[in-house]
Image (cartoon, rainbow, N blue to C red; front, side, top):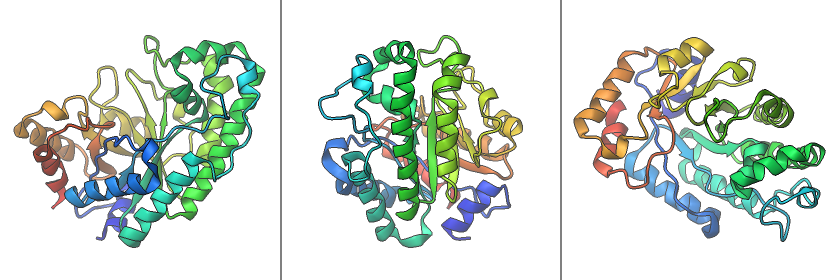
Length: 308
């Protein structure tokens, strides 16, 4: 099997010669542009030779000029559908094109992104959430502009040679989490926009990462996705086996991202062995979420060498 064959077989739950693996960290490249973003991914990929190159999202959604956060309806009303020449989109697309040209067609490339609600909150700050909820119609118009922009971006990523989208959402967080969304907030501001983005990803492999802990999967049973992801070692979250049983889909994970930087080699090898022993197919081996950038190289080599 080549890497694309292995990737597609894992997603489809078909027999594998070995389980594909990947791992990712953030590189703080937002102000450095797409070419530097690509260069840092290439250094990391070439060092560890992952089966799948997962491109992290270190860029933020482009707010209108002089809008630094969301303080009220006046800020919301300034949002319009964004052009792909905006910095976020142009630089990320430049990164994708550089990576595809560098590696050719054989290496699967998966891009990371977020739903429209998270795109806003991620840049505006958590304190903006009550403001968004208090101005329903203005918030919906803003989310429509962001959602339309993100759907266009999904098509542009596909055209740039992207194989899959790792779609991170916070709408599965349960009460007690600062990111918890009650049923009304979810139904009003999240669900439709999330599904629209997933539909715009058609033709690429669709991963959904239900971010946070503890999370519930109830809201995602009818989402058009191919692979499920949670931080499967975090308290209150389903294990990978439970995730696969609940969704009937392929899963990605198996390594505790909250502890990997402090593990002994034997601890990491034991986690890898336990994960591989419990999944005969339909698995991509990885941490449950982003690892600390300071994770020691000798541990990453253990994870990267698993399939060799």
